Amino acid sequence: MAFPSDISLPNDARYYSFVETKRKYNSNYDIIWSFQYKIPETINANSDVLNIEEPEKYQLGFATFLTTLSSPISALPGQYLGDSDPAWILSGGKLTTEDDKSITTEDGTFIEVESRSLSGTLIKIAFDSTGLYGIEGRDSRTGVNVDSRKKEALILRDFNNNVVVNEHLSSISTSFSTLSTNTFRTLRFRYVNLGQKLFIDYHDSDTTTFTTLTTIDLGFRLENYSNLDDIYCGFSFTTPVSTTAVDLSAKEFFLKNFHTEGYVGYSILTETITSAEIPVNPNTVTSTVSDITARTV
Image (tube, rainbow, N blue to C red; front, side):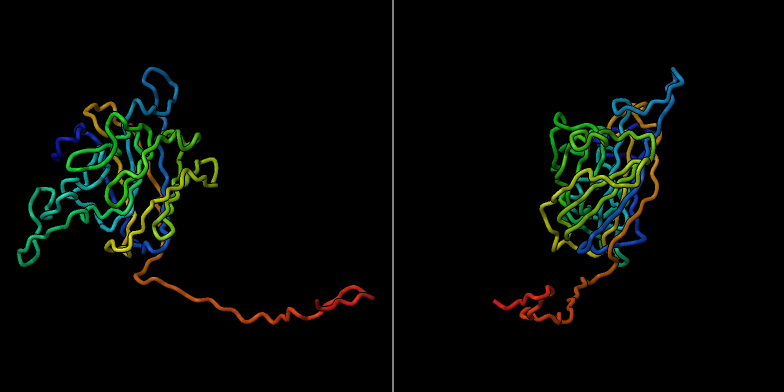
């Protein structure tokens, strides 16, 4: 498959993106999802010693996101980590297939999309060994200069594809400072407070207690965004990220137990809770000590 010129990948690059469509959630309520991943040890060809892959020796990025789309449209691999082509997001236009054939309705009308509404993404959280997911690019894609990218980074883009967070993992946590892990690591994401805050938690295989990796104040509340009661959770992955060198592809990546939860429904539920009046007279004179009388002041 041909990609835009800014994507550089070998023929055997591995990449995929999926959306969990069994449940769609109302973003007026908390949405929580989690999964486990592992980048296992590999055997060095020159020794019998097991070594966890070092980030300088491979390129790998994975991301998780909330979206209004039940399947990705124009999802690009490499440094885009499954994002829609920025040319589509910028200009909108006729919806096409992968073969660049226009999609029409039954009466032959071309299906067109409006600017910014195509991506469908509310929020996307990426873990990138190269930091390239956070760089600026063509067709007004915002981000940092390529020379300012941060490797082994946590990167977050919002519903307008703007970079909200771009930080070294080592600057956030001493125990989760690299993507490499020889055992399954659990990541949990909590989209709360009407979509105004995101908690990212994790725990390694030797414990079941979550530790907060970071808390992000998103700084916005999506009130008029379409389909806020039809939100899906998704995942994307690519290795390598931007190179034609085959040996920079990570050897193995494991993903399991993708779990989602939230409120399934269209209406916002509110309920007023009342209780019976407490039968207490605050002026009642009470004394529990003998030979002493309490009196009202």
